[in-house]
Amino acid sequence: MALPAIATHPIKVMGVVNVTPDSFYDGGRHFDVSAAIAHARRLIADGADLVDVGGESTRPGAEPVSEAEEIARVTPLIRAIRAESAVPISVDTMKPAVARAAIAAGASMWNDVTALRHAPDSLAVAAELSCEVVLMHMLGEPRTMQAEPHYDDVTAEVAAFLQARAEAAMAAGVARERIWLDPGIGFGKHMIRHNLPLIAGLETITALGFPVLLGVSRKSFISAIDGGGRPADARLGGSIAGALAGAVAGVAAVRVHDVRETVQALRVWQAIEAARND
Image (cartoon, rainbow, N blue to C red; front, top):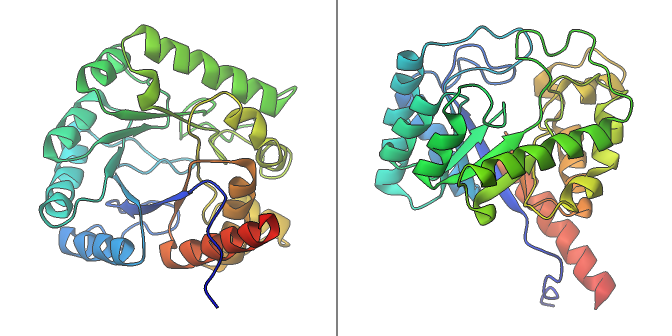
């Protein structure tokens, strides 16, 4: 029997390729360009709708990378992906010069954990590039963001920040339809006290009227819920649960390390929802 038509909104899956030696989950695995290209091919074959390429770790405590080094890490991979696939490519960077080089190499999205606050010209460069931009919430910087983060109402404060950054981007000339929002799970948030209410309140973020990108894949709050101590490679089940929570809340895309498993989970969830509404 054929599956019913999917009635829920389509959810995109963004696969992650970290060309870094120190990312929290896959640091070093794809640092070599040939390994990174092979991994990107696997993600696309597994059903990734977008590929997110990063050349600087943003894990807690991460040290910054020079602009030149970051460009040297990401641009060969972006060119290689673009040469053999039409899949949209996102560059995960806070540096305008890296974003500029990545867009020239074939990327079409700038995913910025600082919400275009890192450099004085970030907003102007985003408008000039006319690419899609992801504005993410983060307290402080990667080296300091987990140093006793505090919120009175985490969901309301994150939503207000993202609304303000979207307005700043539009005032600088970024088209509204090119703006995405990311609540920044794990970025300057306590593992349980902040991340869980924020995920539970995602409808507040999606109600702002912009597509929302959710990244919960392999993050440490999963281990905290599951008894603590579980390494990143033992958090797949929690990653999928987080992605499904995002789907229920209406996010536009989930950023994941495990594309095939996430695509399968979302397809099954969507089929169940369609059958429920049939």
